[in-house]
Length: 292
Image (cartoon, rainbow, N blue to C red; front, top):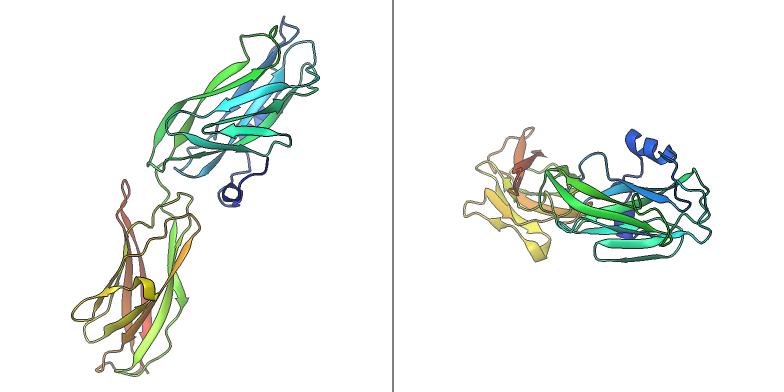
């Protein structure tokens, strides 16, 4: 099964394993069984909490503790915690069945006694409810034969979410050119959600402030203009960048203070207010318009 494009974004996909996960993947069976047919399963969720809506790597290790080899393999079924519910995908090479909060495929085909194999799953919570929180109730079951050891072929696991990641960018995209007193000037900024939390933190508004004497004339894009105050010094823009790695460009046009002195600059202060709980915060960018 191919990983959906959303989950293939390099920055969202934690392909590198932690030391604990790598150790588990490399380890062999922890015991030998009195059952001839004995496949055990262990699940190692991400070692560190994952931001809501972000992707975390889950390792599922199947070991052959018996004396027989499953020539045709066995069926592995993994269910995510019922709350908050998850999308589960995998880079497994063979056929994969999946649905809401579950995934199923064949494992351990030809797995020799006293050896293990590890599959990678990728989990993403459906809900973007802020953490930190632990969600128990995940399960994994490997089914080979009616005569297999029933004591170690299933396990439970949990998923930990972190507080929302507030990593974002408010930066200059096209700087202003020098303008004479009383003349117009314009510039463009970029608002970007670096994630990994989808729909966070860009849930708020951009406020652009000019000192008295200068005034805002217009904004872009035309389909989402800013509201300009009566005195022209404040522009309030309802800008949302609701998807991880998405970006939004905002343009401003202003009139330079007619009384400004050449050789000085007009400072425009842009503040992005992100009121989303539990971590309200702001991003501030100062744009200097040279007066010539």
